[in-house]
Image 1 (tube, rainbow, N blue to C red):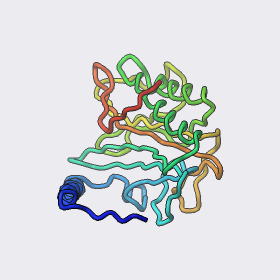
Image 2 (cartoon, one colour):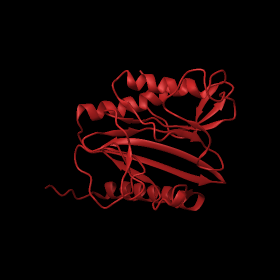
Image 3 (cartoon, one colour):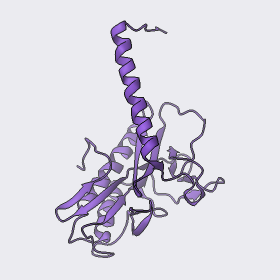
Length: 233
């Protein structure tokens, strides 16, 4: 193991980086509160879901290992309003099928977002996500769905990742919605584990999650959380 001693110039850059990180954390602490802590009794500030866990994984001290995938779902309340987002990350080098699952779950989000504009319905968004994923052989989670976001982290309407085009509430300007594909490598029913929260697709399966809070405007959808370099193919 090579221990790298830092030069005075490098130390100064690290001081700056540390100060900036501290400022970011303190800004979040002062201005916002976690939306998930205590929500329906949830015991943590964020959801950390590993491998076959779809959603609502409770953070633990068990170390991650090379090849795992980790979904992080986080929300906050600021000024009386909520925001909600999720991402799935590879831990080191992962299998090609895990990498594709992560990428295709995000791509499904962008497919659905194309329909988050006036003139469409919730079913059009849901159908776009479903057909994109099922055409690639994935399982679309039906036990959990997206939702409205506003003064509460969960509001109406529900926004499933499966459905029929032309059905459901009309998409209207002023709606704020959490669009969140939840996807399993192989189709599977989701079960809740003994802790009452962890939603698993079963050992040997994999699950991924991608979510943003989106505003519907007259011109179309506007991301209220996150940006990405990856877009739907």
